Length: 322
Image 1 (cartoon, rainbow, N blue to C red):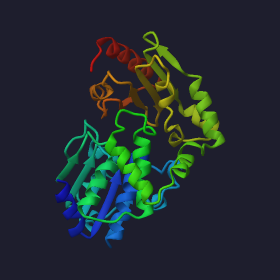
Image 2 (spheres, rainbow, N blue to C red; image 1 turned 60 degrees about the vertical axis):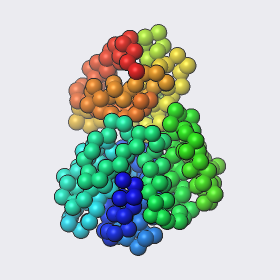
Image 3 (tube, one colour; image 1 turned 90 degrees about the vertical axis):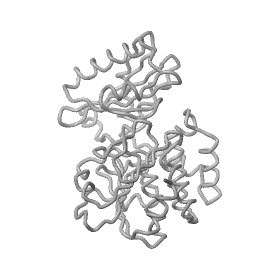
Image 4 (cartoon, one colour; image 1 turned 90 degrees about the horizontal axis):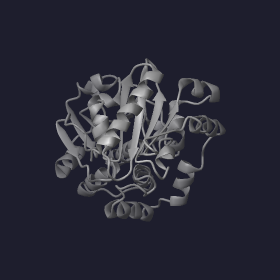
């Protein structure tokens, strides 16, 4: 499949590259790397994400060229959907993409479904960027420092700064190679982890004040409401990474972060230590993800959803599903 997709990249001219709503480092980094490589091959590229690029990722080359609206599917020969378990995860443009002649779906989530004409899903990979790197090798292309910085950032963020279980020898080797292509780790780390706005710190303080422990500390949760965002002048993008604070509690086997969305929806992010499979918990609630990192959305009132999910998580922990 890698060889097949490499041929598609070589043999077509007009590409739409898209990723999921509420993009993370792997989503933006993968899009930027692929767009830069395709443009280096003299292809026409439009990169799309429904939501804006998080502030801490705006240093990445190509991030300022990502568009938030698309139309006219006939102008694209191929749509490449990155880091999405389902086509509707890209948001409102899913309908447009369905009319593109060929969809190539590249992802590393174990819960990912096959919705493209070509599907490459590799759960053993640390990130979608790692899969793209293998495709780039198969083409083959020489990576520019700009493309390398996108790949490095994608791997860095999706492995939790090389702390999570998906930090494999392969992931580290690719990251090392990106450094040899000109990436400066200190610079990337500074942009991602040391560039918080005062408003985001204020939001974090409010969120930490909601910390809840249940099941004798085995379950830890935090939340952010729309009211908190209004108070601090922030947006949902500023909550990226907040789930890692309850996850850092030594007794916590599952960490949950709730975000109150518009239209009576609550976004639920999950993290787990080795053992419990939060992808299975997310799947039960209509979502998906990895063994140790997953997410889903629930319709309903803020307080009711939070209590319902916490209760279900306690039962999940008691059941010990692996």
